[in-house]
Length: 484
Ligand SMILES: [Zn+2]
View (cartoon, rainbow, N blue to C red):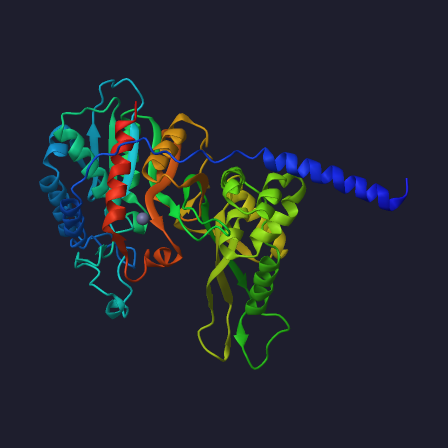
């Protein structure tokens, strides 16, 4: 066969296969319009959130947990705002200020549902106070928003859950199975509270059907070419490991430097490591995320995603081009700290650097250490694991479980135009401390965020629209009502 006709024929066959796969993508479920959602007294609920914002449960930048007085005041505020919920649920104080609520279900033999949120917030960066339109701890309601630290991360989930529980408890409703609300008090500085709650649940032999924590949200304008809000109910979390690399040398006077020094040796190692990133791949949560979001994308993206068997290398190259999508496809390497020398005329006997890695599910800390050793190719450099924050990547939860389907259905009921998909958490949440205490875990909060809103989390002018907070409460309420 001559070359040109052969190529044309191959291209035609390829086009047929590509379009077959593209047509085979799951289609978007029709928007749901039949669900009648509970009425909410938005004004009252908003006032209660604003009051919660005014209590400065701040986890310090230096790693110290919140002021015990503020934590006690916060617990007191919940009890006074949500009396019916407190009547039907058992409340326990765990650790240095975390709260565990247990609402016994009609069928106590069934696996409970574990719902997480955290009470603490990050501080306002010193020097940025004046940039806030309304004070970070003022709890001001203005222009259709509640303003302040914790309106997105994460007090809205504490009060949103309590609002839903309060309304249902007032009606005499009882959950079909046991509900556990676990509110950590120091998530932002490592989560000793979450660890203590997890230990308590473990000692009681409790294993939840599913765990839900902060993390994913509905985003708009983030996924290229998608105008509808994309709900990412995340099904895994990246791991966390920092390694210290230490180069040693004899040291001495800088007037007679040897050809190699601790500093240059370390620098060489860092450059080698930077030049050899961990390999890219489509881990399960990201693969499913793309597949489920693709039907809302333009034709070119649909064809590429539907035909990952052919376009995976291209897709990985595209994703690697941006830091945020690069973080979805590999264990990332980030040099963050450097230390060497005490004086300009003294050769340091030691030079060290800390590299922070965020582990893709499937990569272990031991594998990352082996990669580092291999990449720097210098046996004279010591490698050690740093700090107490380290955690392996989570297991990947089932994106087709009954729990996932329920979360997706509730999301479509409250946000009829949402494209529901899954995803991978890049940061660490309290959920990581509960590994082994659930069948599936998901990270999601029912709030719509655009790129500017994402900057407000841990940033300036954190706020939530009153209408968005009302939707969040409806979402939680419907989640509880449909647990059966
Ligand atoms: Zn948070």
